[in-house]
Image (tube, one colour):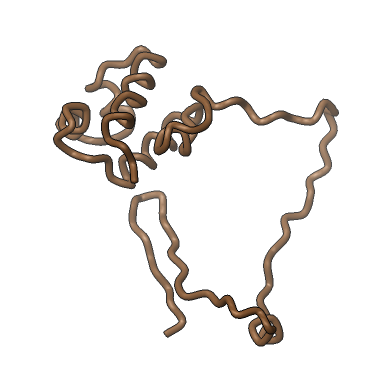
Length: 127
């Protein structure tokens, strides 16, 4: 569960870091100015869409830091190899076969939820 007062402090820190007013911040992330006002006053809690818009608009904001206060802000850049020539590594693709599902492992997938960038989602279950 997100602590709303701590979340508000992290939003304030973001505003100060980027030297933004609440209204400009709202415009940048594409939400109504009143939603920022209601959030900062403690009247409303942040929605998933609101949080994802911040993370998408400001790459220096670590999502885990924004939600829970753990980690760092601004996010530390990921280290890059010192070599200028990079060989692309293949991305492993998980493959589930019927033999794997018949193994002695008692775990099984109950539901898969896909979240889209527009804030919508789709849930799939085996039943």
